[in-house]
Image (cartoon, rainbow, N blue to C red):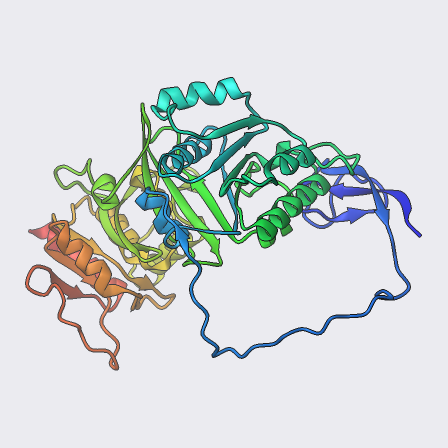
Amino acid sequence: MAKNHNQYVCQSCGSTSSKWAGKCDACGGWNTLVEEETTSNVPKSMGRGKANKLGFTSLGEHTEAPPRLTTNINELDRVLGGGLVAGSAILIGGDPGIGKSTLLLQMTASLAKAGTKVAYVSGEESVGQVQLRALRLGVADAPVQLAAANSVRDIIASLDNVDKPDLVVIDSVQTMFVDTLDSAPGTVAQVRAVAHEFIRFAKKRGVIVILVGHVTKDGQIAGPRVLEHMVDCVLYFEGERGHLFRILRAVKNRFGAVDEIGIFEMTELGLSEVANPSSLFLSERDAPVSGSAVFAGMEGTRPVLVEIQALVAPSTMATPRRAVVGWDTGRLAMILAVLETRAGIKFSDREVYLNVAGGMKINEPAADLAVTAALLSAVFDTPMPNHSVFCGEIGLSGEVRAVSRQDARLKESAKLGFKLAFIPPLPSNQKASGNNQTTLATTPLNHVQDVVRFVRHCQQN
């Protein structure tokens, strides 16, 4: 028989506790436990009804790919894997004011003008506020159905009719509530229940549902972690308010590749696509200066060239400062230790500042060689050769290791006018493809000592 009891749920990780505590034992968050009333119903068996047998199929049976609904925004379609899939649930998160609502309003307006039935439900703004934004973006004439509501029951009842829309945007999932729960909107129980109702509606009716999610101060989507497991696609909208560009990144996609990115530029008329992001990140490079190196990176299936800047300054403190923007702090500490141990370059009495120009965030270890070149260039106060790029991973013994998709990196570098590439040596079982050899000269580097010798040679010349 169903019983009502109270328990305390962590609003950060979703773990439960029978009593209140100032600190969550699961995630370590302070003052995150909130009392919620739950209903438990523990059956004695799985049920008395007759079970239905499942129909199994083989892995080799041919199934057609799901049809795609293109948004007419190439960067968004790239991240989604080619477009929207009917019956899918998509979760998009990002910092406040980063442009999530602007992107979705531009997307829905584009689809509505092409004949797609679109509904936009806002739980944070009134209909008038959304209309003012649409007027500012120049899409007020799009036939998008607007509504302002917070009750999931009312929203689904209004959408589930004969003339149901093909796409529904819910902005945002943290402001919606299910009236069967007594907890406030935004709590773990409410977010989980709201997402479950909208996902079930999407799967049952074949409607595309896009949920907007708030993020915590750590950059994670607020609510239970299970929310990201429930949806089909998870997108993060990243960027710094001081920079004009925004990055849309896919961290989960059941219908396409993950780690794919789309680049947008914030303008007065909304977000515009950036067809060549490498030229955007390198647009402010003028004359070569010391402490700068260009990294040929990969974001998903797209090669992107970014500038890595380093500054090495004398320090009088016992523990010199290490400041990193756009890269992993732990990886910088490893590179500094390798240079000091394997190449004899001392950093223990110097402050080190590292920055990825343009606000780009790099996660792949292939940037080790470019970071090393930028650091050595700053130490010896010697600019790297103009029109040169770097890519390669550095091991703890100082060796330069091979990286994936090297041909694509070199091809993008040659397309942008670079003439020289410093890369790891090819493995013995791999042959050079010969791509770009007529326009891009490659110089293999085996060890960090080779980089040191090259920078010293540039200093002498």
